[in-house]
Image (cartoon, rainbow, N blue to C red; front, side, top):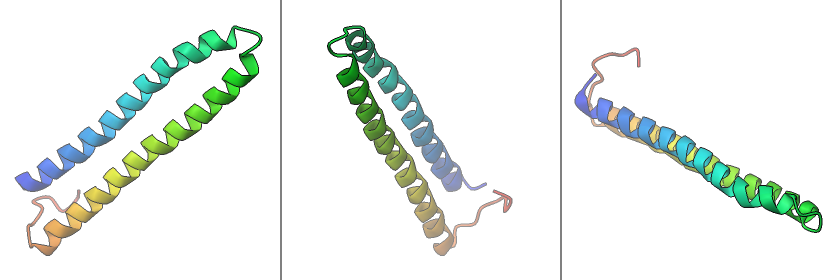
Length: 92
């Protein structure tokens, strides 16, 4: 595979893996205060709803990052093809 395609693929994979890692760390860190608040009876219901809203919003954000990354990868592939830059292996 040409070096430019390799670089494109490396960047795409790095962003994908980075988003997954950051999302995982974000969820674990955010869970700490929610866990503590849910132990207090007066805040339990509110804390559960807040956690649910947080998880929904953060999932949407990270899903959007991954979707944009996939689309940028498609556009880069198309641009390279249109520029006549051949991929050495046509199986990829």
